[in-house]
Length: 354
Image 1 (tube, one colour):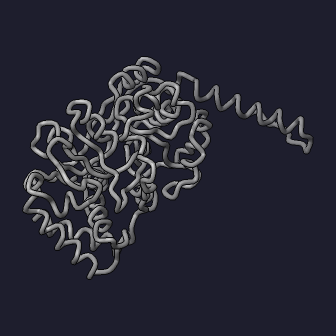
Image 2 (cartoon, one colour; image 1 turned 180 degrees about the horizontal axis):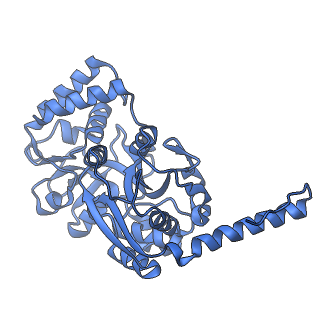
Image 3 (cartoon, one colour; image 1 turned 45 degrees about the horizontal axis):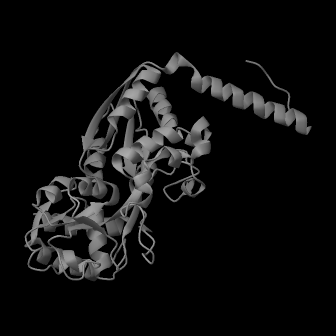
């Protein structure tokens, strides 16, 4: 091991920083770790095939993609002892939870060469301050979408879902996601999120049970239902909503006056990942602006990486799903709730779906 003497002189300090940075870059560029497999666990229709191909060719690493339909499914599988995944995609409150439960490897994302590309506002985030465990994948909003050719009247309110008109009744899709559904119900009732009040949660249950008679399905993969016409109103993520509109131009993403949620999905490494170095290589790769833009172009979500905009399809800059209208509220990012609140959420959700 080479020892470097550190003195108080600015020149020597700068030289040391240069040596350390160069050493780090060489280590990251070294092909010694570039071989084998990478097992990615993520949402369906979220990973660009050409991105996978590019990574595989660059590093001689075979990418295997497994998908889930909700964060609850992902957490349940990992908590149940499912191993073998190297990288998971997890939302902001889930990352917060997984760090607290020691489910993730501390991989020092902030020390990776491409971390310099992460936008400042996505560095000291509530779920991973300083970015020791996770890196941005995509961020967006959760609201709802309607078929503008069929749904009339005031469409700027969550009442479209909870006090539906005749053309909407029986043709509503709600996400199969406990937090998203309960938070949108709380917002409609003008009640606080992460709610620990049993009386408030009884109101939520009553609202959702009343709505259930008009709900066609509870499914987070909502695009097909909207495009086929099975649903004329559905909870929606903004990027996936844009992909639905590509196939059916009459679909409209709504920014309701009651407000809407913001979220960020992140890349992280589960404890005991079998291909740890390959996982780190992939996460560093995804903080490159050109690679992050590939996710935006495919999934239609913003990515949180500086410089990616020059690689993003021009039409996305003005797409209504990514550019809220003037006067729209700012998205609300909701941290992981307390155990008391989580317990109430789970009770409501279980009663609703049974």
